[in-house]
Image 1 (cartoon, rainbow, N blue to C red):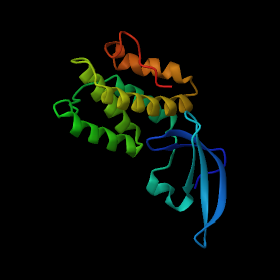
Image 2: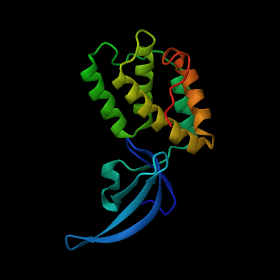
Image 3: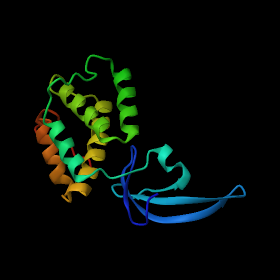
Image 4: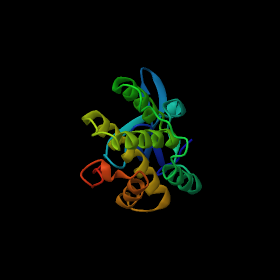
Length: 174
């Protein structure tokens, strides 16, 4: 159970704040809902309290987990990825990982796409998924580590050697 004003992660949407917990009657049944405001987009979502776990709503990671995630981005040892697969298959795999909302899955997508970018120009779809993954990761890490989004984005970009992505600039994901 989450509490009012708690920061949470909504899979594929990012960090949000529980702005209210309301009881609504729908189809004759009384249900409790979390009203979640996604911080990056200001989108407001109603999430049934009893379905929150099934949807993947979760608390922010710990500071220690955030630091481990950053370290994992800096280490490519043994990382294989999906680079040999065609775009349709990779897109499906990437989408599933982003929908999971789990930081290791999001990092996997970032690492894989950044490795691909070292060998070829990214397609529009690859860039879009990369930006979504970057936004998901950086929004959570900036909240957990109490740093500005752009500062985390630059740090992550440095670990992934992102200068190859867009004319020596990190793509804007805000």
